Amino acid sequence: MTHRSTVHEVLIAVFQVRSFAPGQSPELGVLLWQRAQDPEKGFWSLPGGILEDDEDLPTSARRQLAEKVDVTTVAHLEQLSIFSDPNRVPGDRRIASNFIGLVPIYSEPQLPSDTAWHPVARLPETSFDHGTVVRHARHRLVAKLSYTNIGFALAPVEFAMSTLREIYTAALGYQVDATNLGRVLGRRKVVEPTGKTSPSGRAGGRPPALYRFVESSLRVTDEFAALRPPS
Image (cartoon, rainbow, N blue to C red):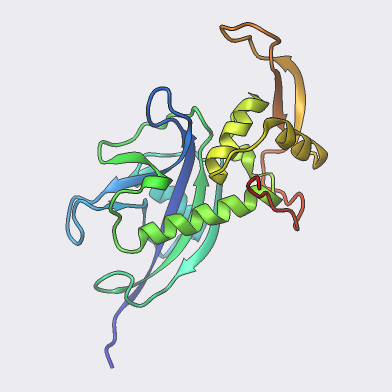
């Protein structure tokens, strides 16, 4: 029987809704850094690393983000799952605790030269099982958008409902109607009007009302709810 050392690592899938080209609709992006050394040199990896003896998991996740990709603040950080396949990486066995981190739209963290945002729908070649980890985290985000108020971590502090529709559309992967979205989130007491309006665009017209999330911490709003694509 082969005996190998086992280490515990933390991997963080950091998501943000952002535009990847001028004039294009926003998409859900994930933060990746490019490996400079073997194994799998040149492949793209999630930020993360080994859990230190004096750390709990959330502390390690925040340290890894600060050290590896220079991201010191996220609007929401949450542990999702464990990846424990004995052969998921070469060498010592690594058990990975997967976290999701969310950055609001329009925020621009200063990134190192080896780090970049990539569209989740068009991932580059990823190292080891990191592509699977990204897809799992995105699936959990989609589910949480249905039954929690987690959208607060992707949105600016104040927003027009059309902006929130763009955020939900990008994260869910299908078109969302702004009126229906506002009605659902208002009924669940997730968002509320600020009483202010945004300046009108070039075409003029009625200035859009501004909204905000009622809370900036995670809350289950309807445990049986499910947002579904239009039929």
